[in-house]
Length: 376
Image (tube, rainbow, N blue to C red; front, side):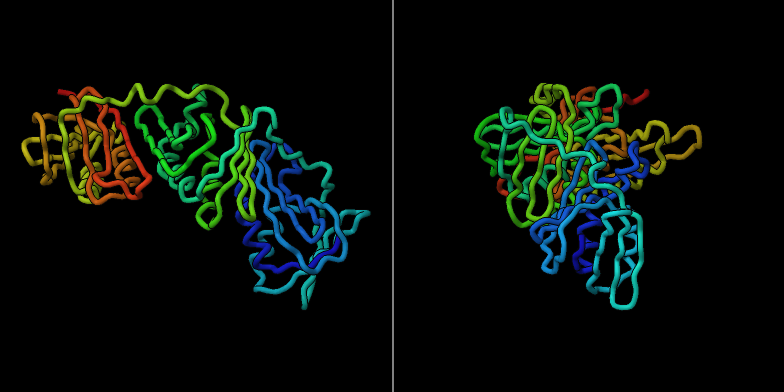
């Protein structure tokens, strides 16, 4: 196996797929990149068994095809020190040593047999569901929901993003039982109805790839695995097995109290006031009286408190409700409109946080936050 490749181009591809590799792997071979060179196409693969990422580079200067596994961290750390220049890779098929040479020098690293690298899972043809999706739609769906996923070993279905398809739209949902985000995208038109739960790690891996993608993403999945094919990258991941809870049933529909306020002003206020909240509960109180919102917090253990008043537009009965400040800050940080609407029923029921204007013409964002009990 012998070929010549650009140092910076190879590094940019390897850095993206290296994110799939765990710091501690159950199989030593997973500490490596798998290089496969055939017909001027270099395919490099990284895996942690649950998720597998592939990237493809077109190589002009190929002397001999072949396969080899190369230590991932050693290779990327070395490539970071090179300016842009051609590198020549030569693999000794007998001892699997890899020689990487450039104009002024060379270094040798040990390789491993490509046969030891785990195979990429295949999507079953008989149960495969396929849809082409705009990269911006997929990126927005992941970005707006992944922060709301849980870390719950007892309920693994809550640890991913539930993606529902019907013939008119794609709906992305995430919840940790305290907060819930539902993001609907109406410019996706699948051939039928289907759903799957995308784990958190591959969702974050996709975020890094989609930001630079210009073409539609070919998505395919069955009951166990999903694949996402981009222009130069492919991600295959194992799905979270199980049935996602009926999220629509927990979204309150009758919310007579409606508060409209500047999003950034409220977010900054919550951040300031929450400094004085109890470290265990992070409770802050929102008291609405006419067109004035009073945000307060206190920690009796340390005799500290904070209070701030904001102007708002309010329709409804005066009320006081408590929220966990960290959750409210997360929700406000992931809404893009200048103003937000808080729809409330009473202090014991979930509140809805909605953007006053949806950013895109195909967007529909809804965020829900469970209240906290306010001690008398």
